[in-house]
Length: 102
Length: 93
Image 1 (cartoon, each protein chain N blue to C red):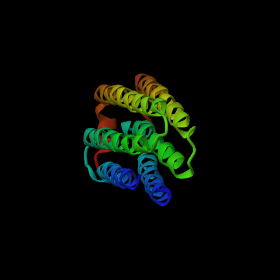
Image 2: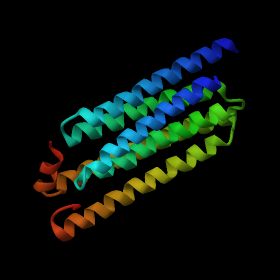
Image 3: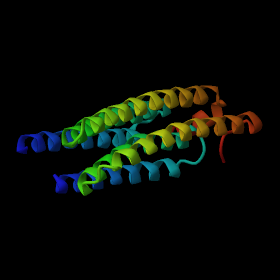
Image 4: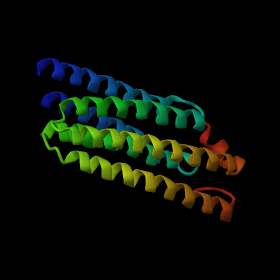
């Protein structure tokens, strides 16, 4: 049980690292599409590690299955919304895209 | 495990606060749409970690609701911004 706790703690630390990397990318990257990239990729990997850590602590197999479904749902929804936002930014007028550049 | 859960939850909350503060400070443009993505992933992770720290198994259901709402919220945000740009030529402000 102690080994499982240690692995779970390690996974949570890795997840927090990826979430922080996503936030730093959101703050520091100069371009809108780069920010979209940082937020989508890093945060989804961080959520994956979080789900793995919580899976190790789960008591029933049904919970493990539900956690996997939650991660897949967030992945699919995140990819879809990411493409919608990128398409919307591409179709928007050039002035609004210019305004996002510092 | 409980202490680690609280610490990670605090870190995630800090991430959400900084990200939302940055996104709301940039008025207009497509940047405000990123808030839906930010809340979709980090909010679900926060619900899961908090549930682990408190020892509440039903937090998984809360995370599932967060994920479903974030998907609908993102699509709604994109559609609303789309209509704004069609009408006025400039989105936001």
